[in-house]
Image 1 (tube, one colour):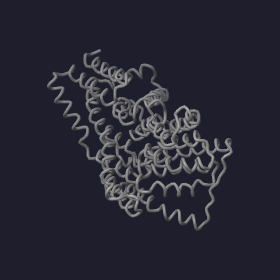
Image 2 (cartoon, helix red, strand yellow):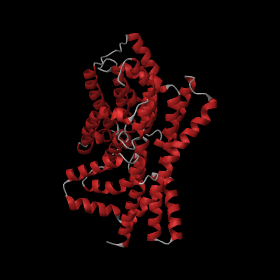
Image 3 (spheres, helix red, strand yellow):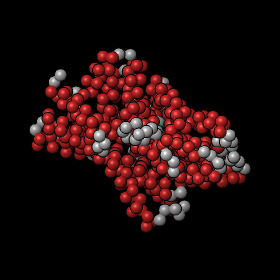
Image 4 (tube, one colour):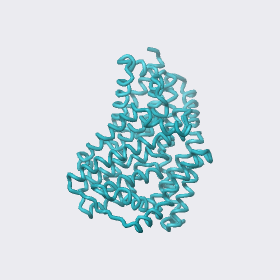
Length: 434
């Protein structure tokens, strides 16, 4: 084994050790990458190359979409849009067993389709539905688990910041194709959760309580149309080529701001606070992309992807077994690491292996994102899970048992995403995006 390969493996081990002892992800990756750069180069060259790679990694027009979509999510969260989407979700799911829980799931899917954030959905929709469900006598562990399990659909259904990050690190992958590929996996995730929530509701004795007359139904739909039209305007504009995903993110900000002002839930004096909130959230993602760019360079220089590929091929050459191993690894990884750094680190390692089997980069992007979304609702680091617990004012111990059936159904959907190509590729191909 060459000195470069040894250096690369030491870097990965050092990252793991720093994470285990509790160092922040950004510090762990940065320290390990910097030390590796100094081993394979002189200190002055290492500093110069690291700075260049950080700048190059974050100097991307596509990445500009992330702060804008985050700001759009913040504005929607504070602009009264979530409440109108909840009312629309009641209309769609209000006659099913456990109607309020079903409404929560549909509302998370709708909110995710306009915000792209699992944590934002868990906070906004959970904050509205939780008190209503508690008032109706729903068990807190049940409705908190339903909210947590369905919130990550917003990370799959476009627009999705996670998919934008993947498109950046994967290279020539179309963001539009990724967005369209996310619809079926995200919808299947939501529908699977609705089946589980319905079965649990029947066992717990929660029946349908929502009844809408036709006049009220029309009123609710008309009230929700301006919110839902943002999906049509932004995603539709990207698809027909009227503007790019980055330009679409700016339109999403303008649209959500105008709606918030019209609904009188956003005040001009509050805008600096919203901008600061969005900036704080954006800075976490951007610094991770910059730091991870150094690690990606070191891995490419030291041949880590080739080492991992040869190791997997040494175990088996069976495509199904290798993909199952990858899924298992990513599921475990997702319980300890947020999706953004995980995608930045492991896409360069696993993508070439999957491409050697003929898997399209778009399908792989949805596979890795789906795995890491499951990790977002799994202890010990699941950010969406902690958000949902905080909103419901309950503990992880109280909801983990209720979450287990949801893990089962999402695992089934993950296998479908991994092995049934049309689930991810059908819509992009029909639209001529791949």
